[in-house]
Amino acid sequence: MKSLTTRRDFLAGSLALGNLSTLCKASSFARGARSDAGKPRNKKGVRIGMLPRGMPYLESFRMARACGFDQLEPPATFDQEEVSRLKAAADAAHLEIGSVSNSMNWKYPLTDPDPEVAQKGLEAQRAALQNAHTYGAEAILLIPGVVTPSVSYREAGTRSRKQIEQLLPLAESLGVYIALEEVGDQGKFLLSPLEFAAYLDDFKSRWIRAYFDVGNVMPMGFPQDWIRTLGPRIVKVHLKDYDPKTHRFVNLGEGTVDWASVRQAFVEIGYSGTYTVELPAGDQPYLSDISQRIDRLLLSTS
Image 1 (tube, rainbow, N blue to C red):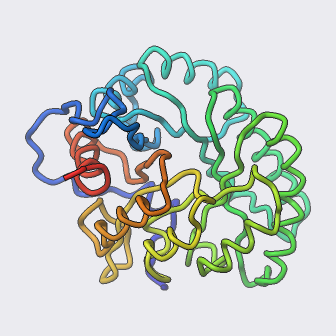
Image 2 (image 1 turned 30 degrees about the vertical axis):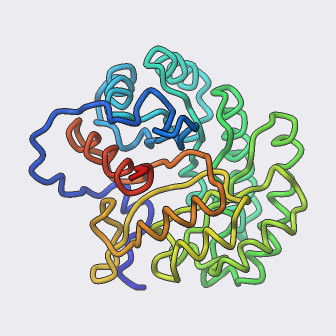
């Protein structure tokens, strides 16, 4: 879709925050990690890029914790001092780091025809794996391939498998999942749930899993269908909604995602992992509102 917002544009864009007047509260699901039935609940995560910009790590992390979030998702970095600072702040704020994203997926695609670019992509993924191990995170997010005028669909498939296979020994030795994310029209690769499931299975490795993004599949199908097809392959989930009229990602509950059906599909496959929000940055009332939307749309037992 020609006007569909790219991931980079979306994350850099602004979202109308609305007229929120209530201050941030810990939701009824925060801190306890237990549902009313006494069973462990799905945790709530927030990407670090959603937190107020310019605010020190410890202050913004404590805000996220107070708003009901359990986990953070930082970007991958080669800077080990930055990793140490971030981890210390997360520990002090009593927040887990559940996964590591990687914006370098776009700058250095693993499927790029230039061997030097593809090699930089591999180095970025190795850095992400090492970051995740240091943080104690379960998984890294990896975009397997991007189809372009100079990279055919077949070439994307062949190259991505070859590159990802090189990462498997490190992932296994560190005990970190490589969670592949479907990026839909942005990557023009792995465009159906059946194809994505088969692609994952072809690796024949327990360390290759899916990082399922609810919003990304909306231009191509229905997230509840993808969830049921991928089933236990899903190890992490990204949340955002989608407006087909503007072809843009929007806040949870403000688009056309059928959240009741999505929630039921996750229940059916027994998903017990984290729901991490991927929306633009905002202030404390905004983060609180998003946390409460997750409660209402996905975690409520009523």
